[in-house]
Each structure stands twice: as C-alpha cells, then as structure tokens.
Amino acid sequence: MEKITVSFILNGDEVTAEVPPSWSLLKTLREYFELTGPKEGCGVGECGACTVVIDGKAVNSCIYPVAEVEGKSVLTVEGLAGTDGTLHPLQRAFIENNGVQCGFCTSGMLMSAKALLDENPEPTEDEIRTSLAGNLCRCTGYVQIVESVQKAVKMMKEKS
Amino acid sequence: MIDYQYLKPKSLEEALSLLESYGERAMLIAGGTDVMVGIRNGKFAPEALISLRGLEDLAYIEKDNDAYRIGALTTHRMLETHPLIRSELSALYDGASQVGSVQIRNVATVGGNICNAAPSADTAGPLLALDAVAVLKGPRGERNVPLSEFFTGPSQTVKELDEVLVEFRVPAVMGEYGSAYHKHSRRKAMDLPILGVAVSLKVTDGKIEDARIALSVAAPTPIRAKRAEDFLTGKMVSEDVLEEAGKIAGEEASPRDSLRGKAWYRREMIETFVPRMAQKALERLKNR
Image 1: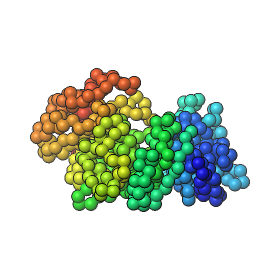
Image 2 (image 1 turned 90 degrees about the vertical axis):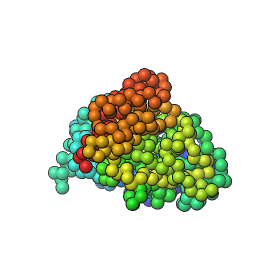
Image 3 (image 1 turned 30 degrees about the vertical axis):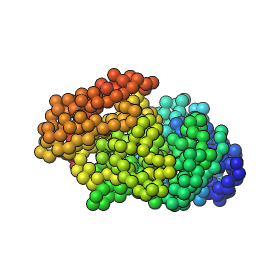
C-alpha cells in the first residue's frame, strides 16, 4: 500500500510523517518518531497506556488512525516538561508522592490528568477518578495516583 | 495487520459517491473506537475505510420548535457535557456519560454507537425511550426511520450499504418527559452492560399520561417494552403500579445466557430496574 503523508504539530513542533495508511497514531509516534513514552498495553482502547492529548482532549492513540491527526496538535509525555527540562507539576507530584511503581501506565495517567487540569484546574476527587477511569494501573491501587494529581493541583495553585 | 486505504471525504456528497464506487469493499469509520478494534481483532477486513470525521458540520446538538437535533458525528463527550442533554434528555446523558472512558467518549460518536448496533449500545436504550428518529441519506434521497425499527439483529440495521446516518431527531415534546437510564454492569468503568434499562414518563397530577420503556441486552436488539408501556399509561403513579410494569417488561424481554449474565438474572434485573428508573425519572421531573 502506498504511504500517506500526514502533517501535524507534535509537542510544539511542525512535523510530517510518511507512513502506511493503516498505521495508528501510537505506531507512528513509537516507530516513526521514536517517542516511546506512549505505550501499547491492550491495543484496543481499554487500558489507556497509549493516552496522548490531541487539541486539548485525551484520546487513546492505539485506535486513532494516523490520517486523522492531519493539522491537529498532539502532545505526548515527552512534551510535558518545559523545553529547559523543568518537570511539569504533575510529573513532580507523581515522583514525590509515589504515583509511579512499574511505570507502564504512568505516561498515560499523566496525559489524562494533563487534559483534565487544562480544562478544570481544580477538580474534585470524583472528577479526577472519572478522568482516570480509562487508565488501568495494576500496581498502585490508584490511591497514590489520585493523591498525586491532587498534589499537582495544589502546587499549580501555589505557583499562580 | 491488514492494509487498507484511508479515504477522507470533505463533504457528505463525496462520502456517498465513495460508498457507491467501493460498495462492500469499504467501511465507514467515524470515531473508530469500534471499527479500529474490529480490524485489529480480524472481525473486519475492508479494502478501504471512508472516514466521516472530516464532516465536522455533522457534530451538533440543537433544539428547534419540532425537535432536538443531534448530528450523527456528535461525540459521547459532547452529549455528556451539553446542558440541554443533561437537563431535558437526561436518559441520554446517563447513557452517553457511561460509555467507555473519557478517552473513548472524546472520539466515539453517537451515530457510530447506533450503527455498530451492539445489543449493549449504551445510547440505544435512551434514544429508544426518547422516541428518536434516525435520518439516513443515500443516493435515493433522505429517509427517516424510527429507532424502534432501525435494528434488525446484532450488528445489523436497516441502513443500506450506500447510506449514511446523518442525524437523530428527538420530538421536542420529549423535553416534557422525565427520563433515566441504568447501565447494569459489574465494574464502575470500562465495562459493557449486563443489562440496560431506560424509562421516560410524562406525568400530570400524579397520572401517567405516557410512558416509554427501552431495554438493551435483553433481546437480540435493543427493544421497547410496549406492553409494560401500555399498562402504565393512564394509571396513577404508585409503587405497586411501577413494580407491575417491571414484571410485564421482564416477560416481554427475551434475554439469553451469556458470559456476562444468565437470562433469569437479566429478567429479574429488568423487574428491579424498570421501577427504579421510573422513580428516578419522576424525581427528575419534580426537580426541574
């Protein structure tokens, strides 16, 4: 099959990919751009390890056809920290609050939380849990993860 | 992994002409949360996907004098966050907000949920209980199909291969009904329903003027429990009356034994949740 050309914004940079039309966004991110932050867990939109933010909304990149990102803006965990390497408050909170154990779900958790906080800077615990319901973690039992998001909310509030 | 072409028509006309030229070799894709999974699982092997996502003018929620109009490309997240849906078509809010995860709801469309025609579709029961009509467009023009006549079997609908579902119309009068939907499942998130029960009621001075009851995963397609609806119509609201309606609805259903639940269990849950959703619909009417 002839490759297609897709141009979009990836972590703030204008990029173009030449990939087979059947590739998912996840496959393109990992194998064409070599961004391995987004992970493939289930590959069918159940586990959320592949979560990225497209135009402000969290989506499962494993079932997102790459052709559909044309002209859109994609943010992966690699684009979460500042360009000088300063970690995002969510990243700091996850580290300081033991929101990470094996780490496989972490980038997806961070991206779901990022989309939530951009839309709703002071979410309730329920709203946090709803936003993370599509991100499975088999280690933590979720408590530290939810607390990490709450901590990030506090850090961002103090800063502003 | 199979290979396929990915076609992105910019207008409905272009989509229809692509459908005509590809015929059975192509599939429509909207949000893709069912289609992409089906391809991966080997359930579908199209030569081409025709994406409807470029038809952005088909994503809308509007209300005029006749009807609520919901574009087929409207995402579940749009339904979930729209004040009109939450307050006036509450059962649809209940259904849409419980599909998959936020990530899924951000892309999955209501048109896709209905056209995929899973017996477990969470927007099917609510739309049935709200008397929705599906608007189909194709080379032979436009036709309106009441949702109660739309499903013909699991994954099967009356939509022809060369047609596109463009809109749902819910009669404006449904805004005067109270409605509620219960998704009965084992987990709070990321699960399919064992059973879905949607009820909408119009009540004046304690008397039920009109009732709609829809059940999903209770038969090969989502169904209306019409005998139970007829039983309720004209009666004064009471616990006994609602419970009796639940029993009748349970008899009307033809659930099967499956991995998620046994037929007898589904029937008992219909008896339980029809009266509970009726109560919830009544409460919502009161609090409006």
